[in-house]
Length: 383
Image 1 (cartoon, rainbow, N blue to C red):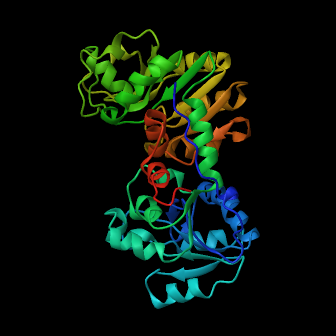
Image 2 (cartoon, rainbow, N blue to C red; image 1 turned 90 degrees about the horizontal axis):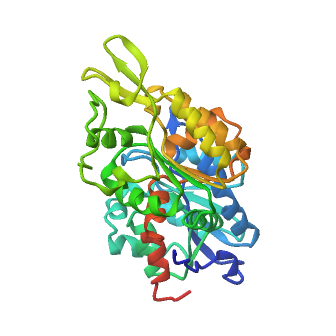
Image 3 (cartoon, rainbow, N blue to C red; image 1 turned 45 degrees about the vertical axis):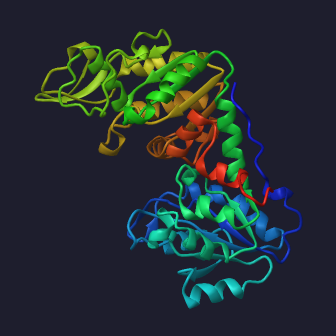
């Protein structure tokens, strides 16, 4: 059985009126030509932001975006302005940023510039964390999607301030903790790549779920371990030969695959893949099999697309998404490409919960905690 952690809830922090709250949000969203093209995470961040404003807090929002130091949160600021009254503060350590924070009035909100413009953020530099902590009297982590990383704004700041979790974070934890102990019959669909990081998860959930379907590039590693030809297909840096999962009755694999070969795109059974082929997606028999399993399942957990979504192979993922949305079972779905595919192509109202996270979702499912959770629970302030 998993251990359920008692997470400090910002709603139980007492009066926030007039207090400056440093809010770590998850605003790392896709941006093209200076415009946000997917505001899913932004929408999910609003509940906590609005709550703090309504309570009369002076809210200072920090987040990261992109991977380069030149990446800016200004497009996110413009998107947020469509939903709330908010000010732009610029770089937190600049005069502009310091003035923006000090001039806040109760109920007002300011967004500061991309934290990853500073090396101290990703290095979890203690001096950098201390400078961030000076921005507020109370710290709130609502950035679930980033909380598997030991960065200054996530694990360093809680050492300096009374710390709580935001409303989206708490919902994420509740849903994923519930998924760790499913009702039966249960189905776990795991796609994507990098089996070297996901093998412990598969080993664990084969014991917890009635059936675990492994698709995407992950399936190629199992096909290879079973002696199948996988041609030019993407594989992980792992050798699964001798692994106990290969003989598990709970393991499901694609019944057919879409391949790119010398004659173009075709559908083949896994054992018929050629040296010149590249597996890029699941086939129609696989989709039908999964649809049947989905209809019967009381709990459905899904992370990762079934094919190479970024290269246009998304139809099977969408078709499975439709089945999940129509299912009567409780469904929890996450992973960037998976969520993007479903939001763009499926009526997601039937999905019980969509996580804002990918890596953090998998880490919590495997371990039951995250570095950012441990940082707050271990804080000397003992909130």
